[in-house]
Length: 349
Image (cartoon, rainbow, N blue to C red; front, side):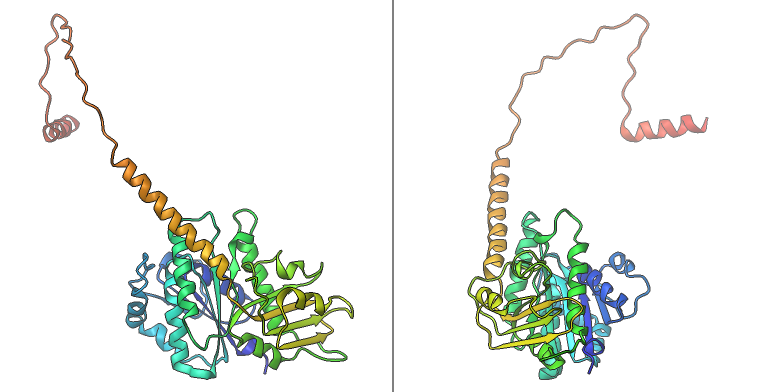
């Protein structure tokens, strides 16, 4: 089995669809779902586009996600006909459509296929300087994700790790990393990081990270595209594809992420790739986003209350008599409608 051929990638909402298009351009099987016709036009003539009629975002009303699936039968029918073993859902938790749909779509797929599919989620977290509702949506979306049973690995992409405003770097980097993980066919002595081990990592519940390791494990742990690791040193699996014999010290990785149940190593890779799965969700970071939303709401409510006290003080105005020029006769002011009729009469003259 080639993992790439057995993977379906589904983009939910604008952000999820943009990242999914990058996978489609690399030959992956893909689906796109969004309520905005304008956003979907950016995808061009891609196959598997589903316009969620009547649902251009959920406007903070997350309960409408079930109504959306109920009203868009074509999309749910497509979800029930997925042949691939691995289903990857990509969405922004700070947005409206992807954030609201993510948990219900994941649960829907789980209900349809049971244990026959590996469901992987890729929530994209907002920057810390974004709007209140983006932080609120993120907190609620991750809460919903944590409540689901039977979901595999979760890649928490973090837009805070992008310098400047061009978030495409994070998207492209993730696509490159996941593609390298899914398609690696390197082999060598004394062992190989085979497909069954990679499938085990993808089906491993909890947070997962992948990184190229060109300059030490810093790229894996801190200088990367993922949310900050939860500092509890919990993990289940470590996988390494070595390029060179002594390119990375496994003990250093274990010292940082904790002692895993399994360590899988392979040799002969085009570059050194490290993956860690079964880690705790980055709850400390998510809590910070939630607190930003609460603090932002309090500040906004305080400002609104303060603004209610605004008023204009009473002032005494003395009418000043207009000087009259001989021969100048004041004309009566016309009403709005009369003025309009006079203008039309003048224009027709």
